[in-house]
Length: 155
Image (cartoon, rainbow, N blue to C red; front, side, top):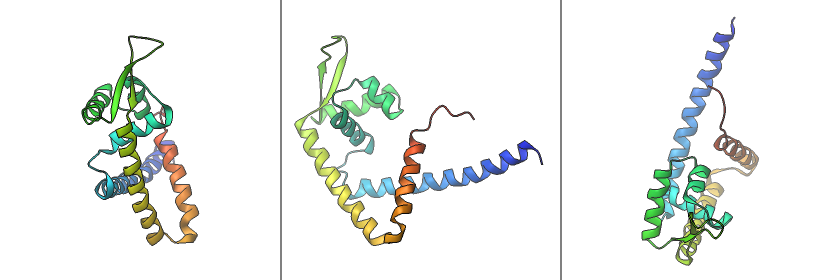
């Protein structure tokens, strides 16, 4: 058997896994969104998370961090700013740049959403995952994190 045959067979198995992962993540995102999102899209919650964890950032650095276009970040930031959850300030090191920062209202909303989502997810894990399967869940999360960081691979 030749290399092409093995690659097609391997890719087929990966295609099935890719579809399973996509469907599972989509379903989990939908459940998290409906349980305690306060109407906020996950993309905006992620921006608040990064601003809390890493401090003020430029729109360009947020777009790079999230692997999205600057237009997508600009739209999310505009909505967050209109709602009073982020503010803009000049970068002290480079006055031409604007830094995005989370506001006190953004902090409060973020805390509330995270507490609600964590409570739901904790209950869901406790009621559906057996204790003996928790290590497999942890490993699965580690693998999903690796996939989310994947870039630069060759097709």
